[in-house]
Length: 382
Image (spheres, rainbow, N blue to C red):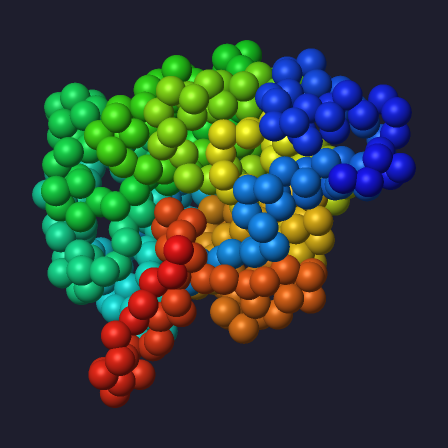
């Protein structure tokens, strides 16, 4: 690290980073208030380089939002609907299976499934969905359900414990949990933006249960609404604490709040500088989570590209259709091609590598027609 580029007030933190020592919550608060964005980028890049070298990854995946019908009415959410609302939708299992079949022909390795807390879908609907997707391709990774969806299924649909619900879903084909729904852990903030949703302790406990079963998941933070930087640091602290305990988080994916079509539309969206600062501080503080993902759907691809110089080592995925952020007002594309993601990674000075759902480097999977025509086996690399 070039200390000539690090201001004097940041050098104690820079020394901790070089020595592999953990920074404190006070350090994180200080970094959030640091006006020198370039210095933050240097510190975050030093952490990123130690953990991940010069690689930047992406995943070839397909998003499925099976329904936006939800029993909750969170203030920040423009996605959820009641059954009679004009923007309500619900996909059948066959519609979902057909969409995933088409995506498999393009070479996806993961389907990412989330939806609202549906008031009337039955246990067998969820299990049949998992089984039919698994039957399409045994190598397809099914990443599905947020912690609040799991709690909804356990309490209202399956009527069993969280662990038993997860066990049944895993047996049916669930590969990993998604990290959504974490929002900001502070109870006062949650009471204002998502009253009635699970508590922070419940979100953490659901992931803890899954991790203890040997499962993996991502973790998230929704920022840029009514929270303070102290709330953000406390959120990161609780994620780091659970990761110390379970080692079950594969990556951290922060989302900037999209206020445009929500009841919080008066809030100014997070600036590009704020988004880069948040990524950099997260990379430095979350020393036990190996990967930081820039969610281009929220950020836009140009800013996500820039973020690889601020601690990011992953640009998420091809997506192939996203509804939650776009219904909130996001104007980014709903998908990206592999060629585009690899181009922006190379242009940023990193080596592009396709990854699997656990952030492991893999060889690109050929489209289905090409796989049928080729007798050569696919080989995964470390």
